[in-house]
Length: 518
Ligand code: C2O
Ligand code: CU
Ligand code: CU
Image (cartoon, rainbow, N blue to C red; front, side, top):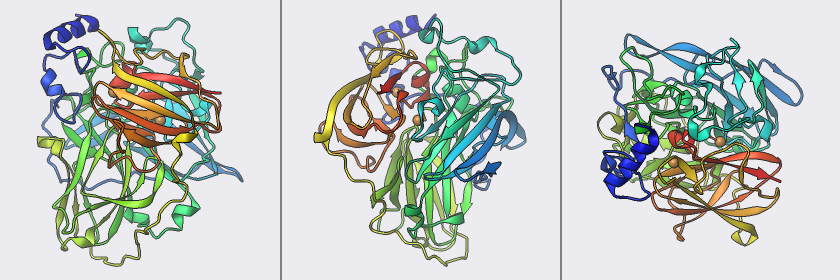
């Protein structure tokens, strides 16, 4: 049965027109808070809390000059040690998952030359980067494998098929140039190949890219080994230890998982349910949900007396104007939350779990902090005023309001305004230097992501923004049947950029659109 037939059947059986159609277990798919379908591992799951939290190593530049830091990354297959006694062959940036962390200085150009020793074409995108179109990782601007092989599954899924596909195709390698004229923030880089992003990221193509600036360096926030990026993903494993993904012959996701692939193992920085030994002191945790489809509601367990265990200091686009205390944080795919946790609020020796209230069984656990360190020394603080440059954009300044409807097209793909993605077809042509209001309307959970510029959330269903909407964002978690308005100013670079759902299975199944800045 082909996808269309499956979808028609599902829609008829479920008796619904738009929302989450197509699956025999529609009720399970619409479980509160969690889009997608669980793919179980075929191996025994590793025991939780047996391995130490790894921190990805920082990549050293191969060369620096007066304006620019130059980096090189070779994408290659490598064997990871995730499961006890069973190697996991993965697609990696430089041999590790997550890839190495790049640290840029705001205002200093960063050039990353990627070489593709993988067996398939790739595309690299810097998520959260304020990047000119030619280096933004447009989905058909492929880097072909150095082997020269052009495998059969280069064919695009039918919904994407386009005669004379455009694209700036590079043989073997490409240098991506990032001006880095942007605030300090936690960015990440990941694959963005059209129709293959879900598979490629699942196989290991993701890493951190941090931006530092003088303004944030001047604040007394926790730093050094007490400033830790945490990349949270779910994965499933095949019997041979490899990452299991429901893939079709053309490299797309199998119909039954089109709603999103959920794994049963939680990895933090590539390790299953790891443990971090902490001092009784403040730590800055840069949380990234790099999962394909899974949403998390993160909480510390036990909570410290007095509440507000997670003090948010930053969002996707850098520091907030002021800290915001939370007992729990909800993260949709693509989102980052920068938080400070004060482990001196716990008794020495405490074991504090980071749990996921939207998970169950193995996916309800994320990692653990053991407050067994002895160094009480801590000169950090959370200042009452954090970032300048978070002044609210005024809605009266908006020169246009555009509506984008994120829903499943009748009998087919995930779409925006009922259009499946086609490279070169722009749904909007905003003018550089102007502010616009964009309205995202959904049928189902869709984390909506915008390239080029960060935005501010203006409203949810006509009311106030939600508790997780503060600051500059590039991805907003839009819930079922919701309308979210954002305000953004388009700046600096002319060209074609992307608006898409960051549920990677939705993205691959065409819930993506170009906009062209003019
Ligand atoms: Cu993180 Cu266009 O993606
Ligand atoms: Cu992006
Ligand atoms: Cu979506």
